[in-house]
Structures are given as structure tokens and as C-alpha cells.
Length: 192
Image (cartoon, rainbow, N blue to C red):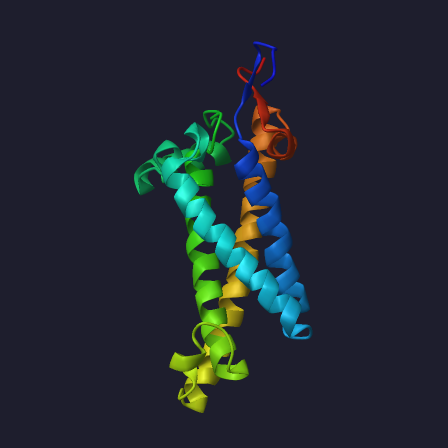
């Protein structure tokens, strides 16, 4: 822990490792697609394992990692977004309400992407934990499953782009480097 009384450890090591490992695993799966199926599947399983970890850590983890710290009502989230667009949003040490909503949206989108990926893997490759259930899937459903999986992966990329835009906006608005804090875990207690 830093000894400087002006800084605070906001993001614990587990959250930081989760965040950057998830980035690497998701984009590995996304860019290799099914050209390198074994790498795509390994990256997909990694995403699934990371999501399971994050759900557990969101319940029992450190203060800023817990869902109770950043999941807000839709009304509070919309009010925060209006303030952010007007450049008068309150600063949060952890996730702000929009960031909290983005965490939840990404968890759902990534979960849906991995579940459809597992189902598609069972259907198309006769492999994975859902192979037995997907073996007798009609062709039209298997084809649709592929479209849904691809849509969800692309939707997740859209969420990532919105997340990056939000990080840039908040960094500019509060004059702090949020990307740096996701590497170090440290943020200023108060900004001047």
C-alpha cells in the first residue's frame, strides 16, 4: 500500500489481473475467430473462467470490486450520464454509476457470448460440455446460433468502445489517468 496519504489503493491486484487478462482473452478469441479453433476455444474458456471469478469477486471481494459498491439504479445512472455529458459529473474513487452499468452490461454480454460459443462448439465440432445436448440440433438452429454468437461478440466490442469513450471522458473531466490507475491500482484521494 502506498504510504503517501494523498493516494489510495482503489483497484486490488485481482481486479487488475482480471481486467487485463479478460481484454487479452476476449480479443484473442475475437480476432482468431475459427481460423485457429483450438486457440479460439482456449480463449473462450478463459473468458468463461474469468467471468465466474468476477461474479464471485463481485460478491466477496474488496470494497471497490463488490457489486454493492457500484451497481446503481437506472435513474441514478441516467442522472450521472447527463452530468457527465455536461462536464459536471461527480468524481468517484471506484466505478461511477455509468461505469457500474457498463460492468454489468459487459458481464451479461460476455456471458451470453461464451454460452452461445459453448453451444456452437458442441453443435459444430461435437466437442465441449454441451456436445451431448447439441448433437441433434437442427441445421437451421445451428446456423442461427452461429449468427447470434457473432452478433454478441460484435455487441461486446461495441460495449468495449463505449467503455473506452467513458474512460476517456472521465479522465478528461477529472484530470486523472484512469488507465494508469487500472495498472497501478492507485488513485488520488482528492484532485486539486
